[in-house]
Image 1 (cartoon, rainbow, N blue to C red):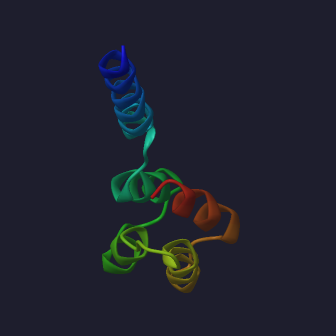
Image 2: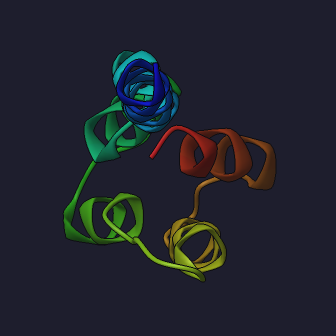
Length: 85
């Protein structure tokens, strides 16, 4: 009986850890989505936009917005684009 409980507990722990990772993966955005949004809004996607959309880490969103603003992307477009990265 103890062995069965241990196996069930291990199985539940693995499922609780792995399931959110598997379920969240398809919904994640990436830098390409950011660049595509900027392009769809009528902007030229050059090196600065590629750099901005490629920002990652804790301050990546803020750096992305700042870089896009500095390249002439309107604020409302930069905010949406950087949410897509």
